[in-house]
Structures are given as structure tokens and as C-alpha cells.
Length: 391
Ligand SMILES: C[S@@+](CC[C@H](N)C(=O)[O-])C[C@H]1O[C@@H](n2cnc3c(N)ncnc32)[C@H](O)[C@@H]1O
Image 1 (spheres, rainbow, N blue to C red):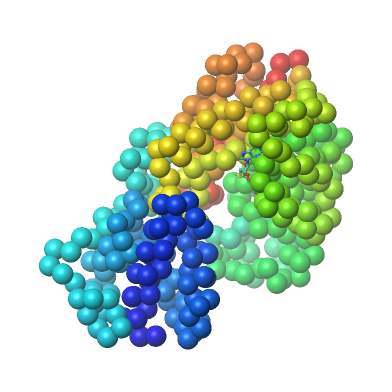
Image 2 (image 1 turned 90 degrees about the vertical axis):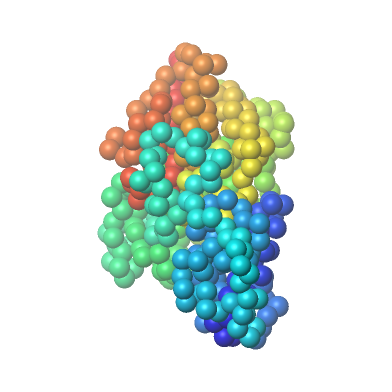
């Protein structure tokens, strides 16, 4: 493919990404892969180049643009080499006078007021910079030192004692330690959520929104003798946990929940969990650096629905914690309504619950919890709080 043809391909992919974002369809990554599945003539260099153009355009454009062409015109306005490709054979049509270009932005304008006041605009560029690849050493079966020696370019993460940081483009899925379950891919911020749960041997720990089990696996590695139940309402996600647990040699029970009957289905855990983790569904605004197209999929209705779901899940979790036990609430979001204000509302409903200190030295205090951000902590963005149920 010529450079002009690659630019035209990027426009076509972006059109599909825009449509998918509007319809809550698959993410940009999947769309790029699908695009090339039926275009076998494109070589690996072409695929890489088109992908790079697509993601540069997505990162540059905060709000969902009107078309792939508008996104690429915006990108080209910043890059004269791209401008020259318009009108070339197999390339995009010639630029029209005054043609609309998608405006450059990091945070969509309508979401600026949602950000925690701690996330100042100086930090915004880090929200969409490429993320490193973090691994978690499976402490039940190895040590961080042993794993640091295995991966070239590996550094210990500064905040999590389990973490190993590799350069962004590292591949580990065919490495022996990964296949043997000695390491898992997990952002340092996610590791800190498991650390905030502080699971102890013999405890009963419930991971209410376990998804594919990233936090459950970290909890099992930290306390192999704890009883861990991983639940989720999404069968496909929860189904991915079992093979991962097998690889890690972790004992984790799973249970599929059917909202709105979660409490009935967890009757045997009512007031019975020493720790309940609510890693709640959220906007994902803390992970824009990994999924920059997430900015294009959010809308006010969807955000309101997520906030209502978080509040409901917190109330469910409160019923499951044993007196004297803890509820750990986490979201990969930097929006106050999903983080500090969400927990503030919970404490308004249950004023006898106690705010517990977590993760000294990591992140910054934000209301009754802590906020971690890519700019301040070099992790994905998270809000984490730990609340104690009165005895
Ligand atoms: C942020 S993700 C969890 C990520 C997961 N803990 C991990 O470490 O990979 C939120 C999860 O909440 C689940 N969820 C949404 N509503 C739920 C409900 N009512 N009960 C249980 N899980 C729910 C979603 O299916 C999703 O997997």
C-alpha cells in the first residue's frame, strides 16, 4: 500500500470506529483487526502504519468526530507530510477549501467539569499517553526479583511490591513465566486495589464485580489460604477467569449473578464477608491511555446509568460485609461523581460506617478515598476507598 492508500484506509477504519462508538459496539482495536481480516493484500507494515494513524487520530480528537475524514484532516493539519497525500492516487480526495477538521482535545469539553479537581489541566496530556506494560508477579509461586531477572528491560514498579514494568510495546504472552502462571498482566493501579483489600489467611473475600478476574487472581496470590468468591453478571467475562486461575494455580470459586437478584443469589454470604471488593462498572476515564476511543462512546445518559449502578452495587456489598469487615470500592475513573462523591453519598446513607486508611504514599487523598492518576502516579487512573462496617 502507498502512504496515500494507508491514509485512506485509516479514514475508512475511523468511520467504523465512530459508528461503533455511537452504537456501543466493539472497541477500536477490534475494528482495526477486523478491517484487515478481509484485506489480505495488506502486509504487516501496512497494518502497523494504518493502526498507528488510526490511534494518532483517536488520541488527538477528544469528542467523537463527525467522520473519519474530519479526524484525519485534523491530524493532517498538524502534520504537513500527511496533507500532501490528499488527492494522490488511491489516497483521500483532494482537500476542499475550509473543510471541517475535528478539533484537537484531550478531555471532551462536556466532561471537563466531571474530573476530580485534583486532575489539573497540566496532567491531561498523560491521560492519553501510551501506557507501559505492567506485570504482577504471582507471589504465591515466585518472587518479584526472580521475574525481574527474566524480562529484558524490566523495572520494579514504585508503588506495588508485586509489580514489574516493561516498555509499552513488550510482548509476553508466549513467554514461559506467563504460560506457567508466574506473572499476569496487570496495571500497577489495579494491583493497588488488591493491596487495599489486604486479604488475610482464612478470611472470606468476595470480589463482587470480578469480570475476568484480574483482582481475584491478585487477591488469591496475596492470600492463598483465603476463601475467594468471584462473581459477575457477565457470563463471558467470568468464563475467562477459570483458565487464568488454573494457570496461576489459584483456588477461586465463581458465581454468575442475574441482576436484580444478586442479594438472593448471595444469601449464603450475607453479613459473611470479611472483605467485599466492588470494582464497579464505570466510565473508564482512568484508562483512556489504553482505550482512547472510550472518550467517543460515553454520553450523559450512559454516565448517569453507570453512577446509578455503582450506588446500587455499593448498597448490595454493604449487606454482604460482616460486622467489623471492610468494603473496598474502586473505579478506573477520574470523575468525582463516580469516585469521591459516590462514596460521600454512600456514607450519607450509612453514617455509622468508618473510613479506613489505605495505601499510604500512593496517590492523593480525594474525599474519603485516594485517587491515582497517570500524571501523578504513572498508573492508570483510579479512585479507591476502604470503608469499615461497624461491629
Ligand atoms: C470494572 S469491571 C471489573 C473488572 C475486574 N474486576 C477485573 O479486575 O478485571 C466491572 C464489572 O462489573 C460487572 N457488573 C456490572 N453489573 C454487575 C452486577 N449487577 N453484579 C455483578 N457484576 C456486575 C461487569 O460485568 C464488569 O465485568
